[in-house]
Image (cartoon, rainbow, N blue to C red):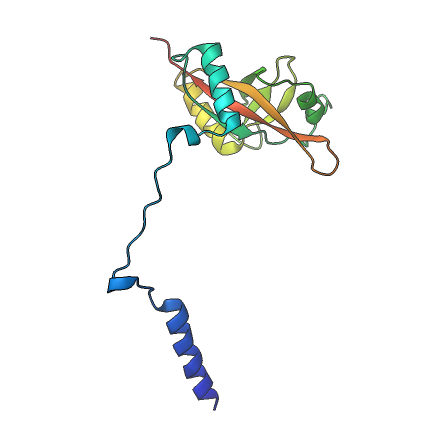
Amino acid sequence: MTVFWVIVGLVLFFWIIIRPRRRSGGVSRAIAPPPIPPAAVLSFEEATFDAWLVNALGAGGFDHWFFTTIAGTSHCNNDGTSRTDAIQRCSAYEPLELVHEEANAYSAHAVAIISRSGEQLGYLPDRTGGEIVRDKRRGRPVIGVFGHKDYHPRTGQVVGAVIAVVRLRMPD
């Protein structure tokens, strides 16, 4: 009796899981998604920042930019100051300095994010930091621009932030 149920189970497994699904005509084709219009590619926040950046630097002043989060915001700085307090004092579109910490014990790609007042807000995520370190070694100027604060959903306290990393155009 158990052999019967094993065979039934295998047949069902093959029929439901393994058997390829076919469309009419017996041909399986992938359906391409409809093209996205260029205006819909940027969110409202991205479009607003892009317009601000073009106004601040000119259309030819930068090559590329992207948003990223700040890592390590829950830690304190070496002098004991709170990084979340430093983030609280930042405002939108504030320029930020991105500083490679070559002697960092945790990552060779550690890039500290420093506010206009000189306070450290945290670090770029490691993968992003690696890209920025390579850019800086090649002489490409890269800056940070404060985007917005992230708040805890229940307490309303600042827990992090989003910044824009801007790769400036190389001088000719």
